[in-house]
Image (spheres, rainbow, N blue to C red):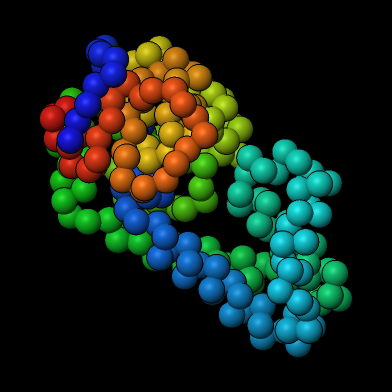
Length: 230
């Protein structure tokens, strides 16, 4: 299915969200959280804490540094450090716990079909990625697929703010309206692209009700529908 609400023209760049757009991220993030949990459970002082301890630590860090909500990597690192300090353990355990999370976070294999789609799209467009997440594409088989990978935090405030899109346009020396952003979330991907004056394609395959009521330029139900862009 491909449904247009507005014309998409003058496109030079295709921008992809990563998690749940080019691969199913649900089992990946579950495994990463489990890896972090398993490491922390090796610490006797951690095992003494109640189930709400981690969330309280995370919320305490956000309260002290609210801008970290735009950088999930730094937020997790600082929340782990805060938590480890709270139980009187060596801070090296915060580093190790994050490394356990990050290693599992990158255990991703993008399908050959999607990789072939990206290769086909490269014949007509420049490809970039814009993500609110913390996955490292250099650690799995998306390595080398994108001219730029812009991440919330280091490269600008998280979607739906427009900073990442403006940064992308500046780096690539194109106008914002020359960028089509493809993502699974109306609230972050579509709203962010629309806010920035970019084109937007909503991959509507999550079965989620979103707060944002604006329209994408185009709606698809399967990422492979983008073959029509080739």
